[in-house]
Amino acid sequence: MSGALRKVQSGQKFEIPAAAYNSFVDAAMDLRRRNAYVGQKAQSSLPQAGTVLVRNDSGVNLNRFAVLGIDAPIITPMANENEFKNRIALSCVTPGDTHVGKFVILAEPLATGAIGRAYVDGVCPAKVSMNSESHQCAEVATAAINTLSSCDSGTASLLWVEPIEQRSTPGVAWVVARFGGGGGGSSIATAEVIQSLGTSVPYTYQVKVAAYNGSGEFTTSGDAFSLINLAEYGPNGSGMRKLPVGSIIDFFLDANGYAFTNTSNYRGTYL
Image (tube, rainbow, N blue to C red; front, side):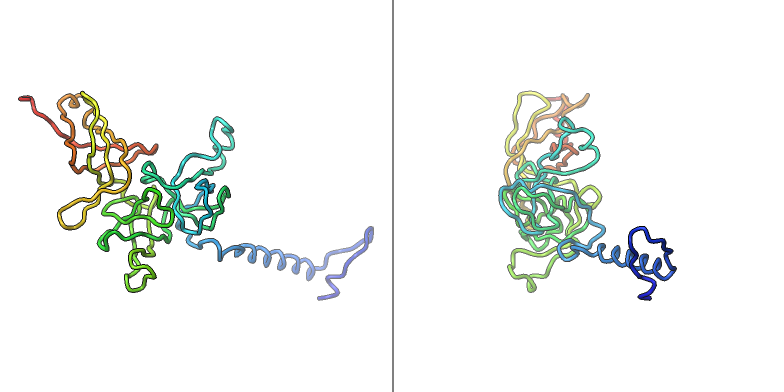
C-alpha cells in the first residue's frame, strides 16, 4: 500500500493506482463521518425540534435552555429584503407580557450580543417552575429567563415532568416539552378581564393570564395586556355588552402576537 501512495515531483508523469484512489475515497468518507459529529456534546441531537438563529439581546450571558422572548428579525425586509427572505435570524430579549406564545429556548449557551441556535418549534428539554403538579402546560413568564411557568393551558405541552423526588429544587422540574406552531401545544389560554375601555363596540380590554387552581378558583399572573373581542365586530356586534370585569375568558394569539377572544355577552333586544 505504501508504494501506491508515493509522492511525485512537479512535472513528473504519473498514473493514480486503484489502491491510491480508493485510499483517497476512504479518507474523504472518514472525514465526512467525523465532521457530522463535531459539536454534538454542545448541541442537542433531537432531530424533531425546529431551531432558528437568534441573537441574545437580553443584556446578560445565558446558559443552554434559557428562555427568551422573540422581539423582531435581526435583518428586516426594509434593510435587506433578499437577506430577510433567505435567512431567518431573530433578536430575542428578556420575556415580557407581550411574549406569550412567542418565545425560544436556547439550544446552546449564548453570551450577550452573540448569535446561536434556539428551539422555536417541536419537542425539546426545558426547565419549568411548577405552580401546580397537576399542570400539563407551560408558558413564558414576565422577566423569567431560566424557566417556563406551568399552567392549565399554554403554548407548551408537558409530555413528561421530572418526579418531585428526583428534582434538585422541588418547585423546578426538567420536562420534555412540545411547543410552537408545529409542536401542537395549545394556542388557547385563559385570562381574567381586569379593565374595559371605550363607550361603544368594539371595546378594548385589559386582561391578565389566568390559571385554574383545581379548587374552583382562578389565579392571575404576569402583566396586563390588551385584548379585542371578535364577537363585538360585524352585524351582531352592536348587540354586545362589555365583558364584565373579573370574568374568565379564553383567548388566543394571532401570527402577529395580538390577543383575541370570541366571547359573546349578548344584551338582548329588550335592553
